[in-house]
Each structure stands twice: as structure tokens, then as C-alpha cells.
Length: 438
Image: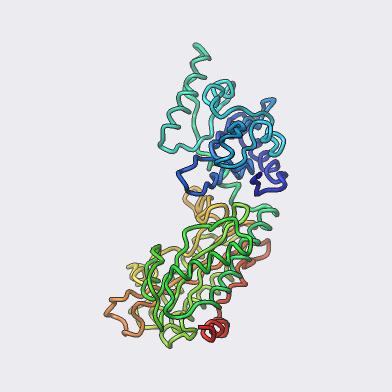
């Protein structure tokens, strides 16, 4: 059976035309990746971005100016192997279904590459520190050797991110539509998990519920390794064990997103396992939520990423002073970085085909300004260590993070994950369903 995520390849044709314009007289080489044991294969994001093709052991070469600028090297059809590993499009299929101008057997890549490089000014290829790099460099040297005594040196090699990273940063109308789908199904899944959890459940059981909700709503895969953290585990930023039992009174932090069309959501919600925030939990949670709302309201074209980051530090530091965890002024605590004890991470990141997506955060040392079409997360948090003797006992071990995915629009922002509840009253009302069921 054919496996094809993208039913229409027009989006990829438009992307290639833009890549061609930026490449000019250079050649770009993209690899899909290799299968690893029994793990489910996901083709590399840069490769899929340019092709829409998802098979392993495939190479795309883009060479504008040549009569066949879109070249694909793929595995040939093999009925015997397809019985074991699934359908292959083969050399004909990659032209018919994915628009390649010419196709080759993957085994012929290194033989053909020196010919493809004819008259190229540069090569765009992302070095990986693998044996493949040596083959690419050898092929470039073979091409240069054919030029004779021209004085031409080694072709310069640039990282593909120089072009693709910046292209991926600004989402097309089609990408926004696909990303909305990922964000909405992820948000609805988070909401459904809230309705189904209760104190005493193991974190791994909650993860199982989450996955069921993702895939029943049409997710293609998990967007990244989910964090399901109960109690003090929520103070571990990248907690991944997801295997501890929860207990009555625990907060649960769920950081998870589903992927569709190679675009992932990234949502974090924090809520009480027994359906009711304690006074201390509500105090910390409300402060984080207030800051998050204020930061989201700042998102608009023209504001710099660093402006939001600095505002996050200042606002969260003020909350830490107001609650009594820090002493002195906001400026003093920022200068000494005292706030990092409770807020050690940045305010967010770009989002797209990868959860921490490509794109420069600063240009020539200056924080870049947001533009319409960018998507970023806003995720303030406060994490009080379980053994922190400097704060009242009722606050120890509380970890709260609230994260939403924000599309920068021409006039402001659009919260793509708004369907996931985050107001205290909404969460407690929804959680009461689970508690009645338990």
C-alpha cells in the first residue's frame, strides 16, 4: 500500500522554485535519512520540506540552471523487499507522483554527483560528521580535478540552513493550515486528558491516554518526546521517565504535541491531579498565567525576540519578589541572575517541522524582529525545588509551566492552541468530570 502524507505536491513545487532563486548557480544536496532497526522512520525535515517524499535512503539534488534541476536518487522497486518493508515508489513513481525531473538509483549517487556539479559555484550540504561527508567531499574533488589547470580551488560548502532555515521560518498559507490542524488536535487531546486523569495514576498510564487521544484525532506521529511529570517531577525541565505514580495533591505537568504533515504542536498544561488547586499551587499557577498572557499580548510584527525574553525575565522576577522567594529589586535580581533558581530557561522558540525549529534568533548580533508568518511558543514557568528550605513548605516541589503556540499575524498574534484550557476555573470544572469517574 502506498504511504503518502501529502496528497497534493503543489506546495513543494512552489518551495523548490523559491530555493532555485536563492541557489542561483549553486547545487543543494538533501538526504532523507536511513532506517534504524525497528524504529519508525521519519524523513529528515529539510528533505521533506523540498520534496514531500518520505522514503529512507533517498537523496534530492537541486541544481537550478540545468535542464533537469530537480533530481532524485531513490531505491528502485523491489517486490521481495517490499513484502517486508512496504511499498516503494521507485524511479518512475518519484517522477510521476512527486514531480522529479529525473531519477536515478540511489547506488549511483556518488558516481553521478561530479557530473551534476559541472559549472557550480558552490555546494549547499549540511555536514554531519559522518562517512557520508567524506564521500561528498571526494565527489567535489573529483569534479574540480576534471577542470584541469584552471586554478579553481575546492568548491565552498554552505549549510543548507543558510537557505532552508530562513524559508521555513515564515510559514506559507498551506503550512499555517497544516499547523492549525496539529495545534487544534493537540489542544483537544490535552483537554480530553484532563477529563480522564485522577490521583494515583502512573505517569505512563497518562501518556497512554495522551497517545490514544492524539492518534484517534488523526495525528501522524508524536511531535517530540512527551513530558508527563507528576508532583516534584515537574520541576525537572526535561523530565522523560514518565513512569512514576502520582498521589493526591500532586500537580501534573504535561508537555506534549502531535505532528501532522511534518508540522508539530508544542503545548504545556499544568493542573491538579485531584481536580482542585491548593492555595499555594493556585498562587504560583496564577502568577505564571498572568505573565504568559502579558507576553502573548506583546507578540506582533516589529517587536524583537529579545524584547519578549527580557520582559519574561522582568515579569517573572517581579512575581518571585512579590511572592517572597527573592529579595531586592527586579534589576538587582536580573543582574545577579538570581531568578534562574526558579526560572532557568528562555521564554520560547520557533516552531514548525521540528519542535525547536530552524531560523536565526539574531542577525549580525541584533535580535531579529518578528514578522507575520512566524510561529513561536510562549512558555513561562516557575519551578520550586523540593528541597528549597528558603521558601514555605507548602510551595516546595511545585513546578508550573504554561505553553502555547503563537502565529504572528500582520496585526498581532493568533493563539493556535487556545482550545486547551488554562484558566483555573475552567480546569477545575473540567477536572471534576474525571474525579466523579474515578
